Length: 87
Image 1 (cartoon, rainbow, N blue to C red):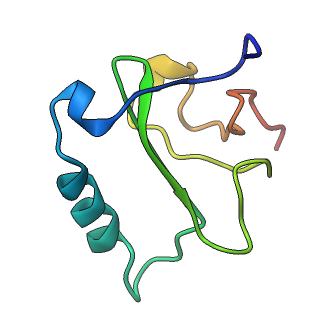
Image 2 (cartoon, rainbow, N blue to C red):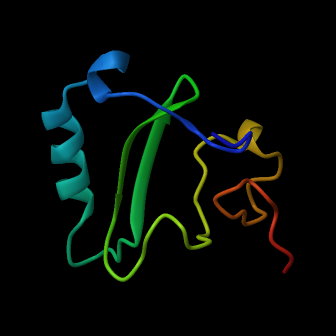
């Protein structure tokens, strides 16, 4: 595992059911959104991740952060490694 690798766990390990996570992803994926990928983490561990073709985890993606403490200025786009992207 590289030092940049994210830790993984099951939804059940953080107190959610897999069915709840699947329901959330299905609710977010509708005609008003264009989903490339989905990743959710809690307590520093990824508990849900999926990608829509032709996208995949190995590609660099822009991400939306829910907490600016993760990477500082949340108005600055970041890639999946947490690196700020130049404008």
